[in-house]
Length: 254
Ligand SMILES: Nc1ncnc2c1ncn2[C@@H]1O[C@H](COP(=O)(O)OP(=O)(O)OP(=O)(O)O)[C@@H](O)[C@H]1O
Image (cartoon, rainbow, N blue to C red; front, side, top):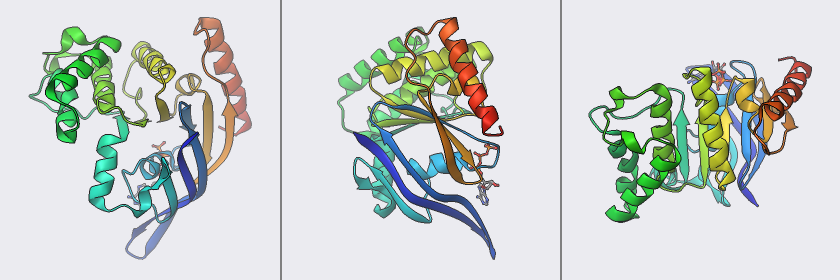
């Protein structure tokens, strides 16, 4: 089932008289349950694509259909509601609120969404924190935990309203390699439980954990590599996937 579809999406930035076309006729289908990454050179338009198809930013032309609903036709209020209820985001630099505990950061958007009662919200937050291994940090301030633990909290926050799809913009970009690997294992688990995920990354080891890698060049999606889902998650399988991906990336001139 197609969950999200971009149809002939273009995005042009305008500064005064200067027009910069950044997305050029993007067509993309994301199926429910897929785990996808987007790679490509710096400046090729990966983040712009992510923001355009997630409703964080407007497109210049084309359609973005989420569950058949065209996000490009929604009012600002309707779009804000879609972002709150249907879409989760994780970023490289974690935007959590100071002076709130990890737990309060996680539950905040569920209270804003107003669709679950207090008890269900607390229960869901507890389950997410258990899954991501940070239950013991619930009452910590965000300055008292590591980068990897903060990213786990950010993932809990992104999932608290049970979105249809989780987007990540370099979610492991600020982490050391062990924490990055742990976060990718966690995202793979979350995907196995049914969550659709799309990440932008520079890191082939991150992309090698996903099942389909899209390659962007100069504003266009020019190639894709299907790796399939991780089955065993042992060092040999990892190495094998990374090698397949590296060879393919070399063929893309990356
Ligand atoms: N607000 C803006 N106004 C004008 N140009 C912009 C704006 N935002 C981004 N761009 C340009 O759009 C192009 C694509 O940027 P984008 O951040 O999407 O690329 P990227 O592939 O994610 O790069 P990186 O890997 O370095 O993060 C770049 O040339 C950038 O300079």
